[in-house]
Image (cartoon, rainbow over all chains, first blue to last red; front, side, top):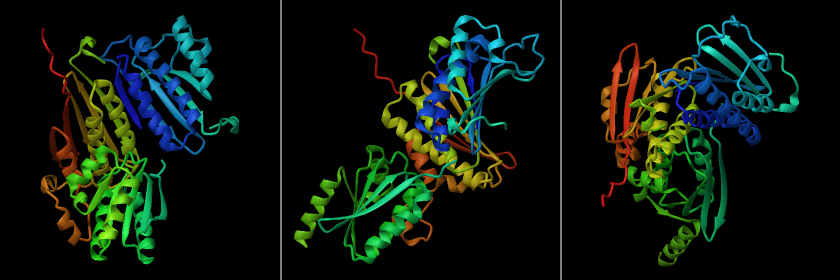
Length: 142
Length: 122
Length: 155
């Protein structure tokens, strides 16, 4: 499932509800769905405000996929690529973020099972979030 | 992706076969609803109540299933009523014409009382 | 999500695989949006039913339930209305006559197939409905719901 929204604050809530519905249909436990909702709002707000600079003509893309173990959500903005990052994934904590974005990222990292950020040459910055259906099931290598 | 979940319960109350439909009434509900109807009909039910609960999704495929039940109810000379529908689905039942063949009641108790009155008259 | 945004309309696009169940996600997403736009609960219920029928048709008929084929739902948000467009990839082209049926329950009693209520429901529940068919590129239904605000009482 793919969802594309304009970079206008408020639409992250529609994404949150869409993905919550998706996660519920997928059978994710209710407490995990709450994690997904919080993380997604933070990720979309970052993409809208920081990635796209709140330019309503720039879009935020959200892709959701599922398999038996996990729900994977990618949130991509159309922001300019950081020149030092030629498309390779980076550790979230090494990114030089302003403080408010940093707080959002802390929440994102605390509530998701896997987080990675990549500078995508086509789309801009993509954050990939993984939620295990059962968080106790340990590390997934896939 | 999970299929729509519908739980069907059968109860007997004051001479009425109460079939609880808990959840979504869509194409996935067909077998469960038809089986419940057949089960109570085989036991000789004359008065049947579909008691809807937690139905935030009844679609046109679900309506077609219910029209199928009404067809058989008419053929078998039974009486059918429905209860527990939200105002939206009450409206849709009226639009489609189902309300002419299955009396709509707000609650199970109201439907049971109406069946009882009917039973004393007959 | 207001007029202060500077743009006259905003667009949300959803791409869904053609598998039953995904219509629920389109319904929930549109309902979430409509709630924020200020639609009444009654209108939101009507919207949910109409979108559910449109997406189910696109999945089952237009795309013949081939999960690899996409259903595209475009929600256009204007200050006074919400436009919902549902398009499939047209593996099967809808017969235009099917979009004007007026089904009757007494006829349905006689038929083996009791269905055929979906498109009729969409027309009954939405303010404007328009179907279009392009061979090779798919079927599309465009539905509009007007946002009715209480009249402004001037002193």
